Length: 167
Image (tube, rainbow, N blue to C red; front, side, top):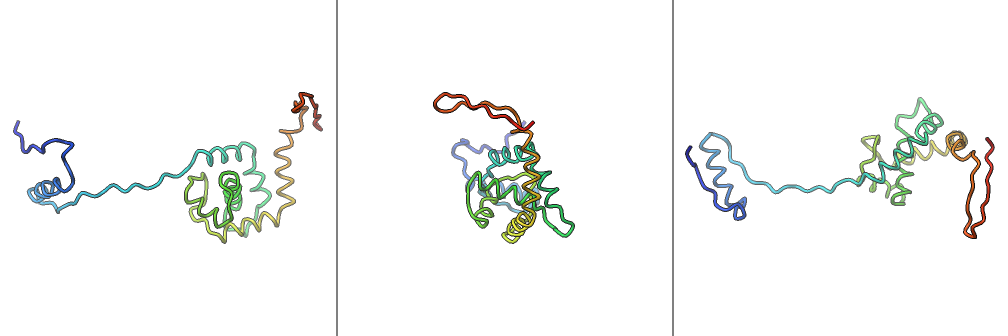
């Protein structure tokens, strides 16, 4: 076994000292020169709170209820996903629709369209308002089984109030 080179102490190596050596090796084997590049650090996307809200949204059946209520053959965008994004934005970091766009760039929202624009958010809101009655009815059907039960609530003065559901 033969030693080709000793590069010295690892803590003393720097790109400017290694580049000439690497380029010499590249020339020796007929490759183009290379330069050390700095690593690019991109900010990570937030996902924990958004993922939890997404799963709660699905568990409560809101995705199905909204999709049914907002069904339209003419609509060429996923209104349910955009409404979910705006709701999540209001919960996590309340802002305007333009602020929602900026926020969406910082989070990893599951099942989102590739391109979300201010116009699409406005169109999703219009679709919601055009079908508000159907949406309210669909969401009420999803939530009613969760709250139509006999419940007991303990008040701050330690009295118990019983709430009887319709079921």
